[in-house]
Image (cartoon, rainbow, N blue to C red; front, side, top):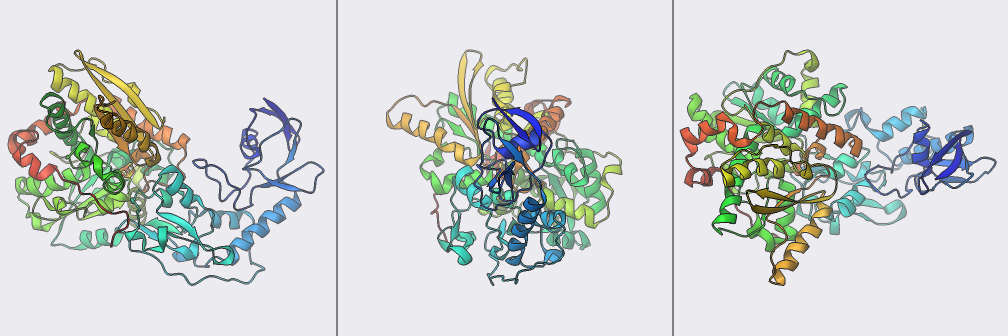
Length: 581
Ligand code: SF4
């Protein structure tokens, strides 16, 4: 432990703690811009400067560790003036178009300018005329707005191991660009949107598809149907002042109806369906030797994109089951429309997702038109839904609770936990146990699958059959798992796992690229707690117990993994180059 004072207040912290973190412990906020708690600090912006008592020299609080006897001053008139000058210099290279910027109202630079009381910038405004890159189906890149904080580059390269974004040029000519300066849509980008979630300003943001949804809601000839993903229900409330993890599912259903959707379904139902299809696939691979072991989950489209580009040799391990979004899209137009007497050609199917990659997934290949129509017409993020609710003036928190529509609405706790890392695995284990043993699991809480550890490994005993599993989240963590599998196969040894879950985003979809800004591990933990609270209060906690799942197989699908299920609910994968036209 190290003893020091911060603004005269004595404090003891662990050796190696940064001054920035030590100050938080005595409730002092040192302003930052390039710093983000998900990323290693790298002192790019210079806003977090502090000084030692009696010394004129200023150091950066994010990268300077505490030392015994240090006397830190975090705020004095000179420090505040230097910070203000740094902000003014950044503003002198920034377009002054806040009013029509996608981050207007939640921009960290705007916030700093407001806090420092900047009324005019004493430097000439020089903004490079750089074009917006909207070649990517999920993410838009506006290099003019870049403040060179480097967060997106660090997320893409160090957290996600994708390397689709980089710094090009030097000094005044420095800019952010996609790798090799190709259009972002042709780069190795996997559309996870973590760059957008970590960007402090409006330089990288999700493609806004809300106007397409408004147009459909206005069109009297169209029948608008909507689904909401598991992770949306524990995060949307943050946009309306609630604590992360607050469950607002029934308010969202009510708000969607007030927006004009005629039928409201829940992606959690389709998550239950995914478990039946994927669980059956797992059991067949284990017991009948049909297909490669381990089976690897495929419900995260950014992970699908990554695997097809970076590990195409592992494609035979991938589950052919579609993601819950796409299963729901297929079921809405191929099954529900017929049952409800609605012309599927007139159904406009919208998904509300925590995820930017889901926008791309809606058109991933022709399997996404398995109903004979575009299965999901538009996918929008949690942030986009929040904007629509605000535009419509809906006081969501005071709406009465409402339920989703049947039969594609009611869900089990297993469907909800898809939203958190380990959730797909836990849900699959609950049902696979039943499929293998013909008995229900006693305690369905499979805690080894939970938590924010990057790679989790465990073993499940299914009546003497031992199933070894691995769970990886945050794309940069998957290489360890895949390399272990490849090494074992190359050496002719038994593979280390039977079943592997992968999610591209740290913490899983609860921290997806389309969720409300400001996600940290603390926020992730609260959202995950909300997910498991929803699971625990569910009447049914295993996908195979959902009575409506039984109904759709009896009425329409037939057998799990059967002919009809394969046509509608499964897909295929192809090797793709890293850079593509
Ligand atoms: Fe999307 Fe979830 Fe995958 Fe993130 S983890 S890319 S939110 S599906």
